[in-house]
Image: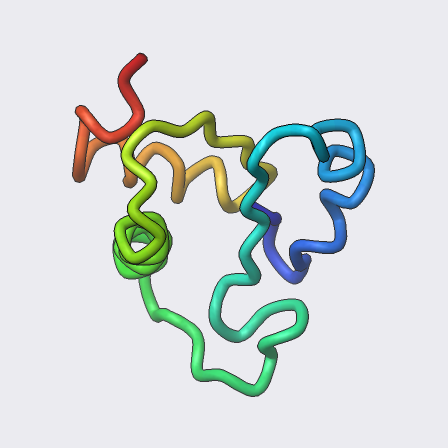
Length: 87
């Protein structure tokens, strides 16, 4: 997950490095390639949006990399659904 005012492209080196794996690098609403979409107003809403994306893709197990503001989103995701990120 990208940091504040960032976008998925900030992870391009990591995407390239893990290209043999399944990588999801979303743009949060209002950021990156989707700046035209109204963004979420709280960290909790951003976490739910990210979890909603993963649920929609039927992804139950994942390793989450985050930067800056998205560290808070990652913590919120873990608090909202502790089993979602468990090994």
